[in-house]
Image (cartoon, rainbow, N blue to C red; front, side, top):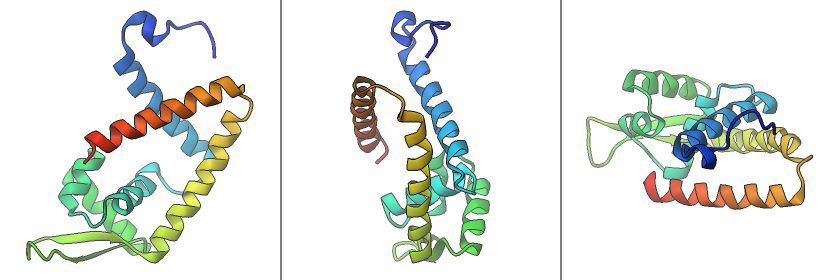
Length: 149
């Protein structure tokens, strides 16, 4: 790290700084991990696997994309055999999207690739920094669990 920019705590901009750095780190991790697909694809599959069957509108809401964008992503993932649509037992006008077995297997492969790519970034850090990042990731995961339904 360089000392060219003020730390978020010094500037009082922790929320904005944290959101920006997390987004930038996510993109860096995806680039270094060579997952072979855009981040949206593996994020959507991960969201569906984590939350169970979801309607297209729920996927769009969770991923902060428009409904047409979610529809296009799901169509592509269906064509690749990673997700499937089925009837929604509570609403005959809607369908529920679930991951397929190949989709779950591909998600596991993407996660392994991300672990390698991110592992290479983290490897040179001292143990104290790794412990700090580990704790920070636990805190962030807890926030996501609480606020992401």
